[in-house]
Length: 639
Image (cartoon, rainbow, N blue to C red; front, top):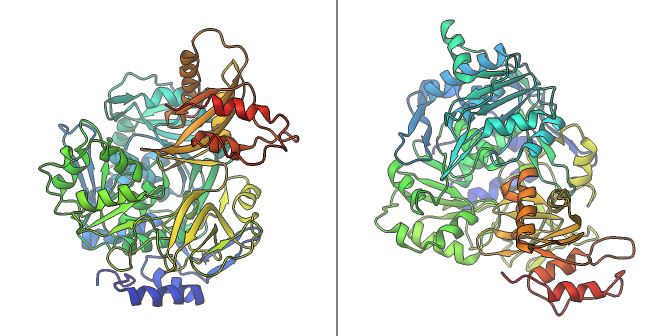
């Protein structure tokens, strides 16, 4: 058995789950014994979901990087910690052993410290998918700073909003990033963001694309120059800063149903224990295997299952800079064969986009090293599940369909590879420590099987969200107020005759586009910034590749000339304000929106029309002007 807490049979799972909900303190206390602590905890758990107030391993002291790096040096020092495959297949890949990664993290911890970063400071990281991104994340954790990684596709405005919210005075970025056939000018986007953030003291810039950049004296420094200063001192080790179990480890911004992104805060100890536990158990990881999570570290999946989960388990984590379809749609399969990948963890969106290329790109690919496949980000549809199973896994690899969120820190509901049953399109069973339940709109629990309702969680798991940065009330309101004493996920779910859970999607005003959550209000705010827009309403609709597409209904003041050009202007406005990820797929110009007499937009009706249902739109008598509904239905866009 590889890890003392690895579950290896269905019976062991049932027993572990039962113990974890009956005696969470005993259960998680035992798991936590297997980590390195500076001081052991006084109390495993104290909590209430009213405020909410959750504390795990209270009184415990540790540094997560000692658990991800230092403790592995003796046993795994020469093992690969990170394998990095660059965007361009002709560029040479890199392998960092645990010894080398430890060395580089210590070096960059000195760089941060030399530039003024101290425990509790917020550091924004805006980089492409290169090993230095993981190094920067771990170096922040080593010095006790709180990292806030921002996905490299976000706009200057989105970055400025996040910097202001976290009051992040330090930034780590690159001159640019490669992504598919594009060069993304990261530093110049940061420069635009900093116009609104004069409080930023230092920007550390890594050279990746050799794009010309503007370097401001006194504020901007080159990563390489700063490393050189540490080298001249003989590269002394950087002593990991001792952290309290409940000190914040990072902030990660996620879209909310209001326009302002929420800074989800995760704490050091509970997050470490839970990401490690779920990584080892869901994927049934065995030492020496290569784990390839295709996500970006700018999302929670990358935090938990590229960096912290695998490294705390002494695993080999593969990072990929590019995209699955460039330079051709066989790129993932080339990488799997090149590095003999054992575990492939990707998004249903990626699978659907690869399906569209047919079986040609799979020709001549071995894929025989694969042992486990996984999906993340959104529920997977039956067709994509079957294609993944047959053509990638050769019906030989269990598929773990993992359901979780930025706020949960790690996987909450999933089968365990080859250990617990799987069922296409079902996340199946909760992980130990997770007590899901379904409730109706009044908060009454829906018991039994073959039922559906709103998915809630009854009690805390170690990596539950602790707060939203600087606004605890928002955390309480968003997750703990809809159903008192419960964590509300915002998702609907059904439970089948075996008690397996299937996630049916968001029940609030949040879209799930290509596995990324985007608030409708956020997109509407961006559309409304366009000079000619009077008002807009945004809903999701089924999209063959992305899962959900964005359908925008827009009231425009006066249309002069080309409608198509105006649509392009609006999408470019959204791109500039949020980023290309939030661009509407369809924009329908309308004379009015279906509103109640109190002014509330009836999205239910707009959603039905976007989905192609133009007849049975339900009761419209409560609307201020029911006639607008027929106009909108007539003008529905079909392409």
